Length: 179
Picture 1 (cartoon, helix red, strand yellow):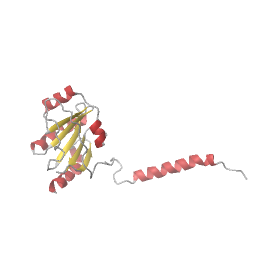
Picture 2 (picture 1 turned 120 degrees about the vertical axis):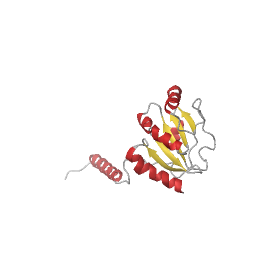
Picture 3 (picture 1 turned 60 degrees about the vertical axis):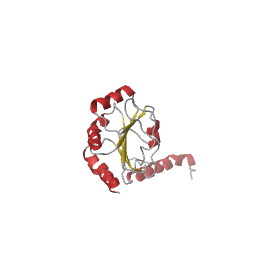
Picture 4 (picture 1 turned 135 degrees about the vertical axis):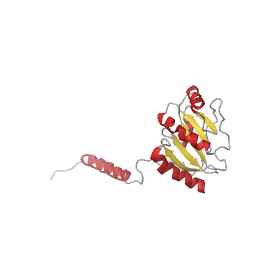
């Protein structure tokens, strides 16, 4: 009878482990969405660096006593430009939005807000993406809904446009506003 080396069984074990991990990933609630470790917890602090000529984020801005949005954006980001009219519309309707400009340079970011309008009550400037890392942001744009105490209620990845905005983001915003 031939003796089987344990090393010969290793590839089978590795393959079985890979199949098990893939199966678990496929049967998650929403396999296309990365979970946020921030939802349900306090909003991390934002950088106090300011984008020139725009209001800086103050100590109380994340816990304003009302539902607030925090939007991570960049002037070089096409999806950020696509959602900009929706941000302007929400701001005109009274929704406080804090903007965090990250992985950007100050000149183009300032020009963008001057030329296309500023929907933000305050703007943080985060060129090294330190705040973005603290918030768990993967790519712009990302928008967070905070309650009045500064607790993160929801994280939305992608631009606030179209049916994705209407079917996923708006219900969460309406739920936050009704509480």
